[in-house]
Image 1 (tube, rainbow, N blue to C red):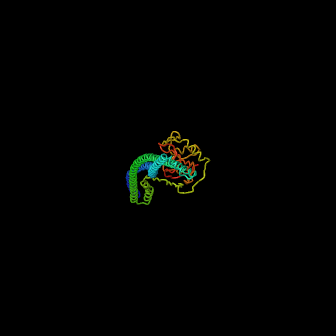
Image 2: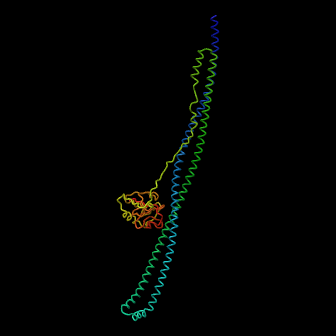
Image 3: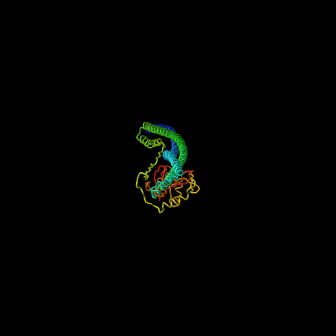
Amino acid sequence: MKREKALRYTGHGKKLLAFALAGIIGFAGFYSVEASAIKDAQKKKDEAQENLNEVNRQIEDIQNEQSVLQQQMADYDGQLMSLLTDMELLRTDMDNKELEVEQAKTSLQIAQMEEEQQYEAMKKRIQYMYENGDSSFLAAMVESEDISDFLNRVEYVSEVYDYDRELLTAYQDTVQQVADLTVQLESELAQMEELEIRYEEQEKSLNQVINEKKVQIANFDSQLADAKALAGQYAETIRKQNQVIAEETAKKQKAEKEAAEQAKKKNNGTQDTASSGTDKTQTGTSSAGNDTGSSNSSGTGTSSKGDSSSGSSSTGLTDTGLNPGYATGVSGSSVVSYASKFLGNPYVYGGNSLTEGTDCSGFVALVYQNFGISLPRSSYALQSSGQAVSYENAQPGDLICYPGHVAIYIGGGQIIHASTPSTGICYGSATYRTITTVRRVL
């Protein structure tokens, strides 16, 4: 009896074992399929993540190059704005100078007319005195009461001659002065006209560079848009593969749970149940992980521009009384004396030779370099060099700065500067244009 029970139990156990083995084999096949799907999704996700990282690096490079270009654009825009401001001031000065030239020409015509009238009047008086000279002198002797009266009458005739001659000389001097002023004003106007042409060439060149930079920025914008679109595609791929991994992992967990429950029902024993629970504990804890965060990677780095602040130093024109001390042992008269050695030498834009040719800022820099003083090579930068000086306190050796131009003050309201190609290095009036600032660099 016991043997029969044992045999029945053994046969029942074999059936359970066979059923369990079949379940395990079926589950193993299912698990193999799920694992393969997860592995394939993970591979696709890793490839997309690698591509996304590469695109993000490209986006960062593009944005860095954009930032450099935008800074260059800002610099060129600043130069263009300064140039346009200088051109506007120059044209105002030219308008004023044209009025001065017209006024000088009018004054010259008046002076010449007065000179001619005086000359004609003098000729008539001389002719009259000459034609009536003898009778006048005879009348002067006869009609005079005494010798003193006679001498007075003769002296009067002589004084008329002297007066006419002095008056005519004065008129001639006035005409010459007005004529010289007219020539000076016309020369200054011609210098401004040449400077205007150079400004227009610089404006054209800057606009060309700015337009080229705009094209480059537009190209970068297009590249950046393409890269961001590609990054979005890779990010979407990562998101989908994360979803696949999560879904397949959930299926696997569900299958494991169902297999465990079926084994529990068939076993009907605490040991099998415990075994099933242990198996569940070992295999049922996998999850999709934290990979979903990678799909949020945009790859769009940000770049920031450094804030540039330019302190506005006093120009010295509106602040009266500015008269700083000297920081070097070089005298202004020595600077003026050295600079004057190069009078008449040519003006060459961008040149760096006091003998072969240089421009206004080059002339200033080279002159001061001779005394061991280093100055910027730009007229714009020179407006911030040294210390501000009120114009009424300007001394020989100070710099007189104009819009887009610079000169060396020599005293007496005069300057020496590399003016224009037609005039070269020459003297001139310090106030021939609008002064922006006076700087003391000695």
